Length: 276
Image (tube, rainbow, N blue to C red):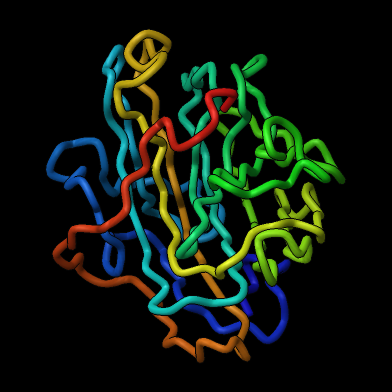
């Protein structure tokens, strides 16, 4: 178990424990490092593994930027836990449709966690989950079309620009697309914000992806009148040790970067309902 992320379920197998001193074990899908929008930066303020962190950036008035950074889990698992230490720069303005952070995906699902789902208010917004998957209906517990948006239901889950936050997210697949027995839980700085136990989210988990989808659509290039930056200090991914797909080897990453590989995934802006 990780001492840095105490809400990790017991009996877990670590798949990734990454200090983000480099990008070893992660796939830079669109070569954003060479494009200048993804880098490793010195930062002694990180909560878990200073003195370096990942930085993804969007230039002032630029229509595109950021990155798509992926971790393949090496199998498909019944559940998935992610611990991540994240902040924006203090000048971050935010999109009018919300700010995608990372995806917890499976063969048939594309769920995403966001920093709010509308314009920020005074630099603040909520941690929000969206199932972001065609054909799923979670309207019995979530908001918007087909229950797309999972708002916090135990604490406001407020996030603010320029501040480090420790985010923990746990998800378990549902038996079928209609069985209502999946789980979505999250914690912000140790405080439970989401606790849903009747979620439809079938098929399991095989991929973690960071992608802001700053891809030139909608308000891109107009709302970002200053440079926007995301920083990630640490990334931790696990699955249950007794999962039917078998145990995977733990990767503790603090080594020279390796060559990137092209991915089959793409995260277009329009993969989300336009209310996001």
